[in-house]
Image (cartoon, rainbow, N blue to C red; front, side, top):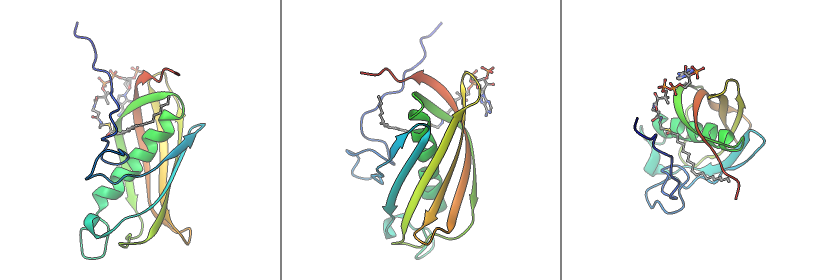
Length: 139
Ligand SMILES: CCCCCCCC/C=C\CCCCCCCC(=O)SCCNC(=O)CCNC(=O)[C@H](O)C(C)(C)COP(=O)(O)OP(=O)(O)OC[C@H]1O[C@@H](n2cnc3c(N)ncnc32)[C@H](O)[C@@H]1OP(=O)(O)O
């Protein structure tokens, strides 16, 4: 049987990679199943004029879920993600992205994430199912 591919981290993640010149460069902090980042998205990421593209919002929510899972000690892939877009996100607005994850089966992590603006209004929220691929070895 073929050996399963391992997930490699090379700092080029589109959402968080420090080395990716075309990435969003989000900086997540995470611990104990929670993850958080703050950032501002500019015009490069809009769809309609002045409004951030929903795909970018989805990528941020997905990443927040992954980081919450990483903080539980696992690298995962996303099997499913459901997104609810509640308000449009305007270009140039400060946002807070937060996620919470829990392991509910041996290979399954369930995560919830949300994006709020600086007035604490929910812009978008997500529910994700993440499949555990490997345990993070502590160095
Ligand atoms: C020391 C600290 C260091 C910290 C460092 C921090 C730095 C971090 C740096 C960088 C972070 C980067 C973060 C990036 C994040 C990106 C996230 C993504 O974009 S991931 C790419 C998109 N997703 C895919 O490409 C998946 C593609 N799909 C698949 O691979 C498969 O379809 C998969 C694995 C999702 C399911 O495949 P199957 O069904 O063959 O899986 P089977 O292994 O058989 O099942 C596993 C278990 O999961 C359940 N399962 C599978 N899908 C499910 C679902 N949708 N809902 C519920 N359960 C499900 C199954 O029923 C099974 O459960 P049972 O073991 O039988 O109890």
